[in-house]
Image 1 (cartoon, rainbow, N blue to C red):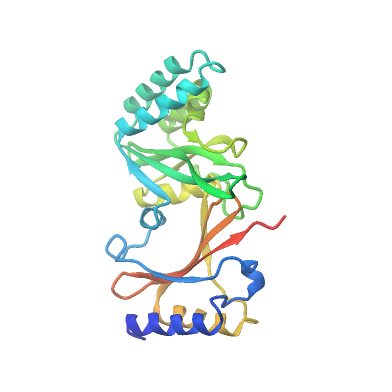
Image 2 (image 1 turned 90 degrees about the vertical axis):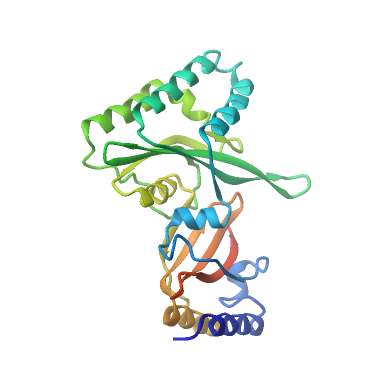
Length: 277
């Protein structure tokens, strides 16, 4: 097994040799070369999608007061279409605070394309997660993404009567309020998704997967790319939990391929991949 520094040097040399397209120019559509990135130890070496997204600044933990302030701005913009939204929204907040023993809010960052200047601007959705008994429940809007190949099916099974009642009430009584969990591009959202899991560190991963935002899979390099195969072997021989992670973008995926070094650092490659229409 290589020392971490030696591993980084070897990967950098291979990337330079192939012009930063180790898996072929066609894979990146000649636009987005691969970059080598490393991180400090994520959660003391325990890799989670939640910590990975925090590290890459895709999600941001915000306070309850920040969340309330943000969504109040959205209320002003939609009161003409939903005259009773302010009152319903307050009832929704009261319901969440009453039912959840613990509440964590994440702002999930998206991109909004400014067609005139071909620039990317920030839009976002919110994730609300909380504990109900010994289960964790999360809710967020679902992105409308036909190019998503993760697991969009909810893993909600064997739910307690209390959890079922909370989910049903959210969907039946607070549907308009759930729309305020989005400050995103028009027509990119569908219904609100819910997920329930036993483990705190899995709730964001499950929720954002079913919401079509991010997903992971075991990574296998295409054997026809010689340099890509060498990098693949370096990753597999020297890192654990080597996977390919996809994160949502308006015109294509943010892609990360990498794993965990012995000291807990994440080492891997980053690129973007356009959707093919």
